[in-house]
Image 1: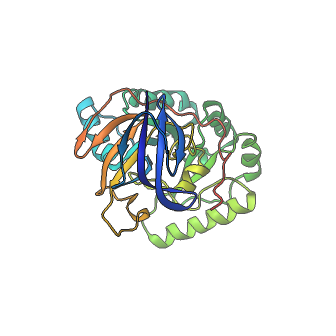
Image 2: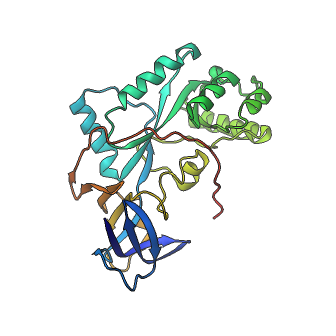
Length: 296
């Protein structure tokens, strides 16, 4: 089936303008400013702004019964325009890798939206063998817990760097201390050491339940599979109410203006109505992390 999303306000190449999206076989076949001839159905979206659906993290994904799980996913993610989750599983000992990995996969088997797996570890567990396990499972993100007792200099970073070839896993800091000064100090040390060692990392922590920026999902290898509208890509987008004389870019992260979410060609949210498609989500393996870079 072919149809046209006509005249929607969309940022392309850094410029916000009215664009039309030609959809065919549930893929974006073409994007133009105007289709002069289109022998198909169309929707006039000139009163809306369009953006890609969000990627969000949940650093402590709960194990809930179905009705609680459904309510949790709807309230924390679907109503916010999220159609891709970044979910780390907690690992305390390396020998429990398979057990914990299977556990999180079982928790997510009924997910209505796609998800990328990550692993969350104490600093002592950051080893070359763990990096190799991530490479085998195509897990591109490692959350590293940092406490007041963490000594970042007491680590053979050269061995870690060698293990990252040819699959450059990104390390994400997760400071657990409450005091702001101590958090800032350890994050400064983290950035300084990993920059010097040439190890892929984020300088700052990731928050749960908030849209991840294009820069972050690019670094983690999730972009452009997710969080990006492009020719040949899936039909997943958010539509926002667009009052006149308002900055179009400023509302793309405003969940109060969000009115419609489409995930892989299916409307899953319209107004306050949500269609929960249990089991429609799939695990998204990151086969080539850090392949793309943000240049603007």
